[in-house]
Image 1 (cartoon, rainbow, N blue to C red):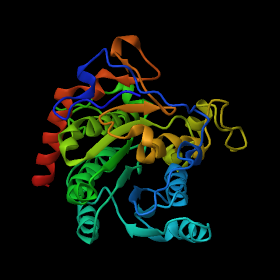
Image 2 (image 1 turned 120 degrees about the vertical axis):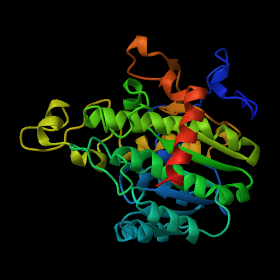
Image 3 (image 1 turned 45 degrees about the horizontal axis):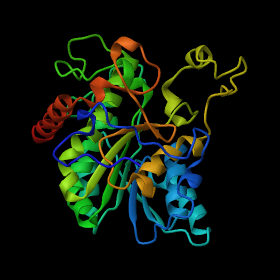
Image 4 (image 1 turned 180 degrees about the vertical axis):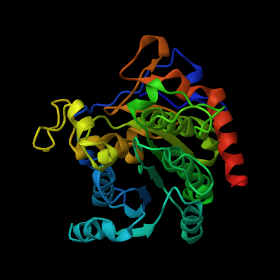
Length: 334
């Protein structure tokens, strides 16, 4: 296994560094990547953990013994998962807490109410391809606000709790959509350029990878952060796509039935990389990297027209630090 880069450097500063590999595959599920790992006494927060990938992440962590807080806009939506986990022998307790990432008042309240150390923060919640430009009360574009800025506010707000844990992990769920869309520092909220649902989504997912890269500054606090692409999975993330779009993607038949393509994963398989980064001993001390299919992804350039890997613009150290400062200032002036 490769070792972590020094705290003062970004891991992508060394192009000759070997990629981290694991014995798992794209078809490994969330429970399998941490089979035999005991998380008793560890505390985790999973945003958007009531359904889809988030729910599978919660199940795997809780069944390994962790105490898991499901942070969602509607806590009642997670109650079936709470009851399900309570019936599993040896599972850690699962609780719910309200959190709306697009509402900084809600994020502040979650942070104020948190008590004690936090070992694992999984930034899983997200929205995709809103058909119309939608703004938060702060004037932030909704996909950027929910997918990135809300998680940035949550992570920085919980920084003391992550420090208290002594060895904490942040996991940021990104997407292959980041490959085509660098972060636009000149117009992040589409105030001047035409709004496009997929450009807005891709930008927010590049920002998510840059969040993990920028967290190198916390390595001395014992905090690591890594990002991931979960792959293609049919979940509630597609709720803003109309039937015509779903049919164009080949995942809906003429009767409106969902028909996943052969390379699509189940939610449990899609959650595997999140759980790997959150709890596997193989990731001890590893930070600032990007994973897909349970392996560290190779660095690609825009000129390659890539369909996999991590884009250079999403792990650029200068962009990561610039975005960190941008987000910090945005929170100050909200």
